[in-house]
Length: 384
Ligand SMILES: Cc1ncc(COP(=O)(O)O)c(C=O)c1O
Image 1 (cartoon, protein in one colour):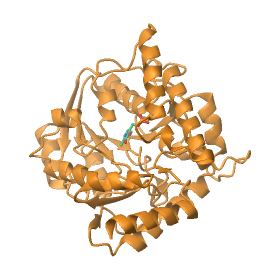
Image 2 (image 1 turned 60 degrees about the vertical axis):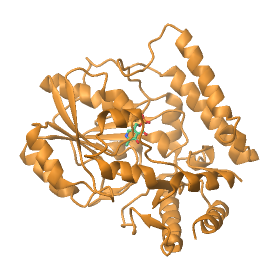
Image 3 (image 1 turned 90 degrees about the vertical axis):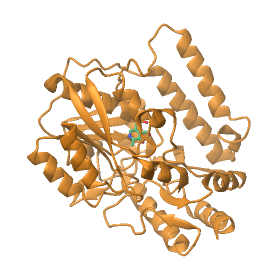
């Protein structure tokens, strides 16, 4: 058995009919755009704001996925600042308010971590409304969580989603536009991001091999097939004349028809149910383990968790042990060169602290009883 946090084709609950009671347009509202990725959605939202305001002073959380920089850095007239979080990834509101004032912030970027909602979220929203600060809610890792009966991503001015993190898709992201803005024809969006689509297809095919034939070498081991194929595609891409995404230019694309079709068939009710049940099982068993601590020690009712995160001291060594036993826990997020360039190690020491200790077990809809029991056995062996 090889268990990964990546979502393979078995996840979609694809049964040839719409099993879900939630449709995608209900989920993202009428004014939504389905993109090839979450980064495309971020880029588009910022372009819309720039059209209106001319320049942006954006305040980002100091704990983030570096891929966000890809869609922000190519934009001119965007100044970026960061706010602190505490060791539970809750927003440090004192620091937030100080930074908003000091840097005359006009866009606040909030990441909902792991499907959970910051305790101060409503207060922060209220403050932003009063002071006319635009709020972008990043729900890339918080799809399907509700607050007061409404999906996350409906509260700020924009909601950002990354669909491939929840469904088995070759590509997919979404932007929900809530207020004050409308789609713009001036922003050029490409038809299909071919190289990312084909890379996505290959990834899905390899995941299928893992699920069907227990073929771990696709993603794991010295001979990772996935990275070899990805490298090959990137080589082909760089040979072609088309512009590639980098930190100086960015080109957003719409979602593929293929992914859109799969999305319309996905069993969302089942997805939420399994994720919640898996999280609850892990929590109830690992709660008493003294070597680890938790970012979230209870699961609120309307929460759809993304992963099961915990903090552990010698994280990289522990992760190695998991990999030896064919479980691939995720690290969300590892600090990298971009972090070090933009996020001060001393000022944002809590973010680096979490980043060094965090490890996340998969709880997605492919993790059924057999996988669940295996993970529990391995965790008990390694951590108890
Ligand atoms: C919090 C967050 N926002 C945005 C993104 C970008 O999403 P995508 O990978 O679909 O471009 C990611 C991706 O990892 C993310 O974790």
